[in-house]
Image (cartoon, rainbow, N blue to C red):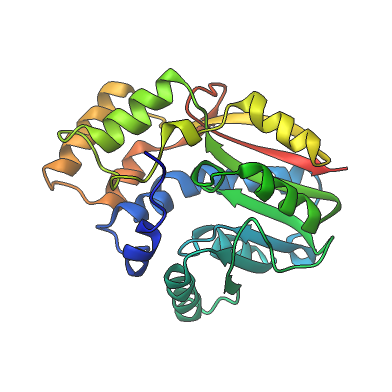
Length: 257
């Protein structure tokens, strides 16, 4: 069964609601990946105030707002018009100024070499043809610009954890049905080949996983299912971090040649 991307319209108004499963991205994944991306900026001695950033698949604006707080000039794009509306409203309430618009990762409405950074998080595994999105990201990146991403490996472990446990089995599932499709996950070697094809040199890959044990993770899932904690607290308790294992989610950066 393919991914059902309509959930980002159905749940669009609840991106910032702490009892909605989408909010787990903010409290769970977002701290770890933003810390990693800040490390990359520091490693390359990049001044945030001088950077033009494109956030592809911006959703409710979690990453866009973080980069805006750093002083970057941020454009956020998402296929879901309803999610764009939610992101825009929240940014105004937070007195931040990302520029959001609705559009497709497969046909970015920007000219060549427009951005210093392109973010592509929680996106590639939702596309039927990620090659096109990577080509478009490379097109709008300036030479020497950075492509920052995360996605999910197509592996036995990701099938067990992300599909069976998190999405299919009634006692444990916490994603909406259709959130992910295992066949659309991307192996690191496949991703590297796509990056190379479009003049993007892979600099680094790191795993992105909970910082607690599988037993502790299971306990938090059952607390969530019993209503003892909400999705916001669930994400915090998972304590996501980067590490060496690429068997499930992974994060990285590539350089536009």
